[in-house]
Every structure is written in C-alpha cells, then in structure tokens.
Amino acid sequence: MTTLFFDLDGTLLDTQRGIAESIRVALAELGQGEVSDLQLQRCFGPPLRVSFAWLLNTQDKALIADAVASFRAHYLHTGIHNYQVYSGIRELLEQLTQSQGAGEMTLHVLTAKPQHQAEWLLEHAGLTRFFKTVHGSEDSGLKSDKSTHLASILADDAFLGRTSWVIGDRAGDIQAAKANGSHSVAVHWGYGDHQELVGAGSDFHIASPQDLLPLLDV
Image 1 (cartoon, rainbow, N blue to C red):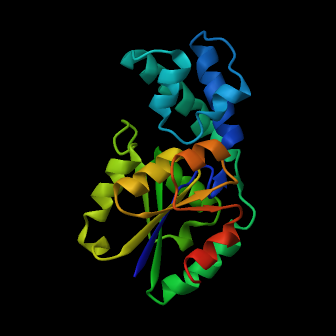
Image 2 (image 1 turned 135 degrees about the vertical axis):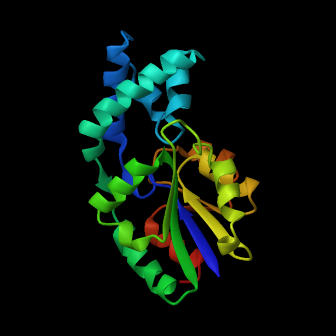
C-alpha cells in the first residue's frame, strides 16, 4: 500500500503570479519599498509568516500579522484566481487514480497554504476528485511546518504500515519526507532551483510529471 503526498504551489499549480501580486500589494500598504523578482522567488512555498519575516527583516509578530492580513485580503479577492495547472499534471493524476481505485495507492495534498484556500483552488481547478484528503495549514499559522504536520498525519491509524512518498518543489518538502521516513521526490518544474533541491538530498529528481510513474512502477 502506497500513500502519495503532493505539495500544491509549485507542484500541482503554478500560483506564482497571484502570490507575487498580493505580496507586493501587502508590502505597499505597509509603506515598504519594492521587492525584486529574485527576492519574491524565495517566498513561493515557505509559510507566509516566514516569508514576510524575511522580506520585512523583522520578528515583530504584530507587523507580520498585519502583512499577512493585507496579503490575504488581496489574495482571496484577486490573486487566488491567477494560477495555472502545470502541464502534464492532469494526465499524471488520471493514471495514478487508476491505481488508487484498485486500493493500491492513495493520493493526498500536503501544503503550507491555508486549508480553505487549498480546497478552493483544487475545486476550481477540477482536481479535487483525485485526492482522498487535503492537509493545509490554519489561518493562525498552525500546521504550516510540513515536517511536524506530516508526522501527525502519519501517526493516524489509516496510514500505519503504508509506504509514503512526498512530492514537492522546495527543500521544505524534501526535509519533511526525510524527517518522517518517507521517500522524497523533488520536482524541477516548480519554484525551487536546482541547487536547492540537490542540496536538500532528495531521493529522486524528476523533470516532468510523467517521470514519477516509473518510480512508482505505474
């Protein structure tokens, strides 16, 4: 029995433009200067509070909370609609679902994105039907650390004795897998660069969604 945990942003969906737009709006509302595309690249994938702490160079929880609130006000109204499903993802999920239907494999989403945002995006993109469960964070920031979140998921009786895989585009995805004894697959079409993913020590590296299939013997 095999359990697959897919990251969302940068793995299933390209949400970069919408997130970048909303980050820039939030920073402008706080009177901060413009940020470069290179700076923003670091913000796609990690928890939002971590990104704003770095962008604002602060650990002031109130300031970070204000930035998050401004981001979400814009993102939920505008930015969240600005996404695309990566090429080949639908076809990959269709093929994996055939194994899922046979009871040999289950597909899940593990993301630092708030739960309600992740569910909305998957439904809007027409991907909900492929996944048995979706595991996102809470608006308060709880469950945004993927290593501890995955540990709590795998402790559930439903996952005991199953082989688990984490498929994602950032070092945090690989670290979560390694911390929990899961196989890790680094995808190279997302937001993490080659150096980051190689440095994270992923078990496998894939350049396209279809490259996952032979790893799983599908």
